[in-house]
Amino acid sequence: MPMPTEERVSQLVAGLVERRGFDLEGVEISTAGKHVDAQARVQVIVDSDTASDLDTIAGLSRDLSEALDNAGDFGETPYLLEVTSPGIDRPLTADRHWRRAQGRKVRIKLRTGAASPDPKSSDKFEARVGVRTDDTVALVLGGKNKPHLVTIPLADIAEAVVQVEFNPPGARELELAGGVAPGRPRPGQEEAVDPTADVRTTDVRTESLAASDSPTEGIVE
Image 1 (cartoon, rainbow, N blue to C red):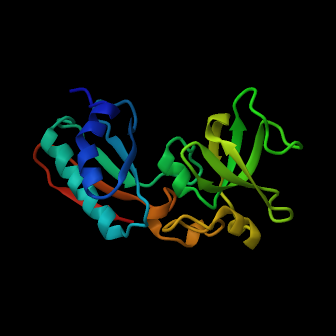
Image 2 (image 1 turned 90 degrees about the vertical axis):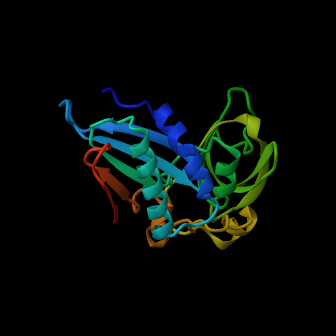
């Protein structure tokens, strides 16, 4: 029996994810090896405006496991369900991504022909995300030494990717950015925050040995 597509699994889990107060950011399905009985790995990526504790994530994992088992799309194929949040270095593609990235450093790539906000920079540069409106976003340029605020149209941005930071930003940088979005980790302190905040520190897995007749077990690491 072929495995369900990522689109099919997204349809099965989207309602449960929303009712739990999360946004579904994606579903990824892979298999370990080419053997007919190879275990499938189902990763459900979720996010929210506020930090969630492990009990909430574990509850969502149990709900999703039950929904997938009841649907029966995996048949007898063993699968590992992993519920996790997006990695820090993900692209910003939706309004909520920009809102949640406030205070973070991003790598910006401008669309062809767009004017750079800094005459000394090219169409690729780093900035700290400030307040976003419907069609613009404030960016803090200059780093710790010469922080200054500019505003550019969102339409001018071809790509924006959050950067992993190992050192905290300057106080003036964060002040100009309007602070860090509520419930999000402070830049440079990712390893010390709630374990659901980053894919590197969160792994909530539910394994079903046979979706049709075997119980599932939730494991919180």
